[in-house]
Image 1 (spheres, rainbow, N blue to C red):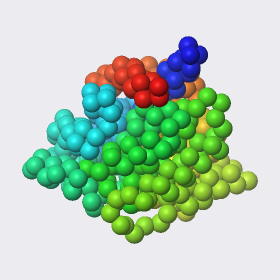
Image 2 (cartoon, rainbow, N blue to C red):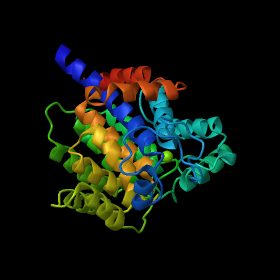
Image 3 (tube, rainbow, N blue to C red):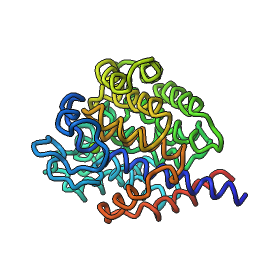
Length: 339
Ligand SMILES: [Mg+2]
């Protein structure tokens, strides 16, 4: 029992710091791999500030998280306060975040979240505000839903559907979020293989696509498989990252970012530090690719596999957020739910 507790503690904390690491590390990337490589003279190997002229991240500090992790922390807070996930709780969490960052005049709110938050603030029913949300915001903040469901893939998928309802309730967006939640849940099984984590992601993607408004879009589970196949080709690592960028993509589209994040996870063999480096290199919506890939990797490997000085930087720069007490709250809930 003791041993299982320690395992969960280290791996839930790993998932939460992983989310923050991938987000902050890839935040300074440019829009295309070639531009990122040229500006930084190779790989991004440490935290950098948001580069001048970047459409969303100009002015951010080195090590600063973005909307992905801010929203994941808001969702985690609501989950802890309510002892679980509800449509109303998820809606309240996202509106609270939106007001906190002054969403109406802040450029980095995504299109689906902005539309939903504006409707929610006017009193709309949260069951109706997400029916057109097809971008990657549902997936980028979903990791806490996986973290409270260790080894419980079906429950993680169910909770992901609920969490997506107020902002991202289309088949493609739910599919992407369920893929990530399922993979994080599977990553919290002691001695699980990386393949089993990826398979859980594929399964979550398939199940998630059964929910939400009927929406056209490429299949997330099939594209996860494509991304993993590209990641395992016999080519130099950087070339495989460029191929992921070109064939799978890293725009705000859920059917691009989520599969690419699984590709990066496979390419890095589940190592959170390598996931961060490779996510920055893929560029585009790199911080979202990084947040997703590193949340899964951190949950799988545990906090001990994230360099300590990076964790210290994340805590110092983002001192509005208490990652450790949030992880402790998620751990408590995870334990209650699994007994
Ligand atoms: Mg972001």
